[in-house]
Image (cartoon, rainbow, N blue to C red; front, side, top):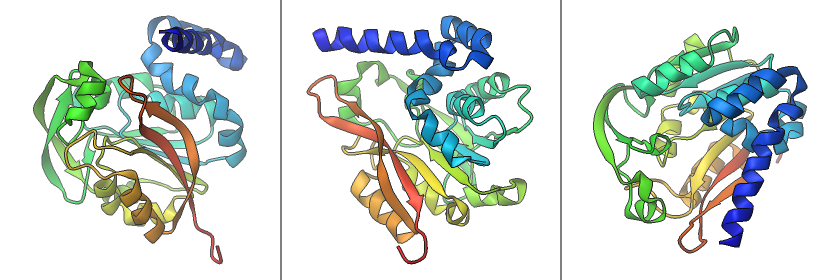
Amino acid sequence: MLDSVQDKLHKGLRYFFLPLAFPGHFFPLASQVLTRRSLVHELAHLVEHRQWFESRQFRTVVDVGAYIGSFSYAMHTLLPEAQIYAFEPLPDHYAALQKNMAGVRQFRAFHTALGETAGNVDFWKNDFSASSSVLPIGELHTQAFPQTAGTHLVTVPMRRLDDFLPEMNLRSPVLLKLDVQGYEEVVLSGGLDLLRQADYLLVEVSYHPLYEGQVLFDRLYDFLRQNGMLFAGIFDTLYSPVDGIPLQSNALFVRQVSGD
């Protein structure tokens, strides 16, 4: 109970100080913290890594699994000159994404799921929206987070990530971010040409099966090594509230330089 209280206090303070960390955005951020905390969630989460993002001077960010735009919003705040391309399959999330990033000249969104083929796909929309996935949710997931138990199927368009290369101007350094709830290997298999142009990959990885048929860290690690990406560390880890076991992390991979 004490850990839970301390965690909530820490999160509250992180949001409270967020507008102070970006004085040029003070009033918009203060308003978002009060009224749309889900939008600034990623920025509050990533502000401790601010120096790393800014020092890499990313010119292109590809946001796969953009949800309502919280990562895109964070990247625009941290890297205001970067071109951002975002992908989101669910219609209501896509509409919110477009609204939340309205007015950002260097932003473009695509309404589609990503995989190895083009067409339509059944997509499990979760009552806890951020847990929606192409894959059915697993028992371990709902045991740890009961609010994710409710799902229903919707049909969404699907294309390959590489299909969009002609519509993107990938200026290096390129950051590719994936948050696709267990579907990482399939998405990347349909985007190998883009992956080869990425300098960094920030991807949500799982250590235990939270979705049926999902790829786990060890297999994804091998896949990325085979495609020239080196594991470079963990940004943060989610632990089960049931028994404290690590469930997933945001993992960083870096493009292998010839001779490494």
